[in-house]
Image 1 (tube, helix red, strand yellow):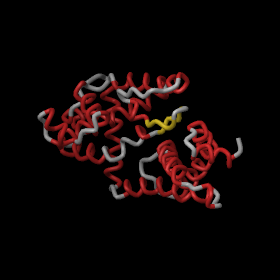
Image 2 (cartoon, rainbow, N blue to C red; image 1 turned 90 degrees about the vertical axis):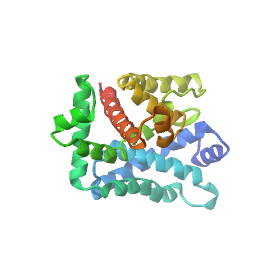
Image 3 (tube, rainbow, N blue to C red; image 1 turned 60 degrees about the vertical axis):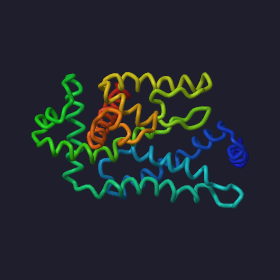
Image 4 (cartoon, rainbow, N blue to C red; image 1 turned 135 degrees about the vertical axis):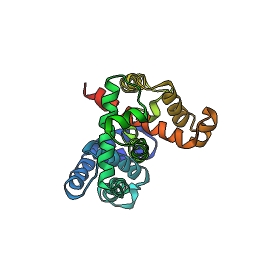
Length: 249
């Protein structure tokens, strides 16, 4: 199908055309990521992170693009894809280097403790990292600002784009083909989720599925809002690390 016809079909609601356009323009995202990778200080992001951000920017550009204006989509989309990535990088760059290093060490420590099935407490992390429990809390709060990135990775299906975080306890009605693709991701995610504590899983479910705020969750569980935020950040950090490991195994 020609690009012009693809755009027409997409704007008329065709999910198939949308997915084909995404595939056609993914090379644009990769080109932009490569340019940014060599030209910016990107903090703790890796190329997969930047590509995920770029795809989010690409989808946004596709939704807002008017093919009747006579402007090439690549010209329209490039600053938006780049902006999506650069904004995320800049939001992280206010963090001092020692904090970024600490977040990386925190991730490694959580992965290490998770492998031994030891209770994941601030005290145990503090002991392993040889830092104070207050420093652990501080790093966890900072980490919580960026660790959801992989959960925002788009999964392209015949029904449209689904984000990985939306598959947690989700019951979307999909075609057999799309359901199969999504099932592979869900099975992997389910195995990883099973490694979380019941309280961690409950907080993730209340936050993402029920769309409750930390304040509302704190009232339900009779814990402080700060404590809910801490448990959430630590749970998602573990989830990200374990999911990455599971994908590679």
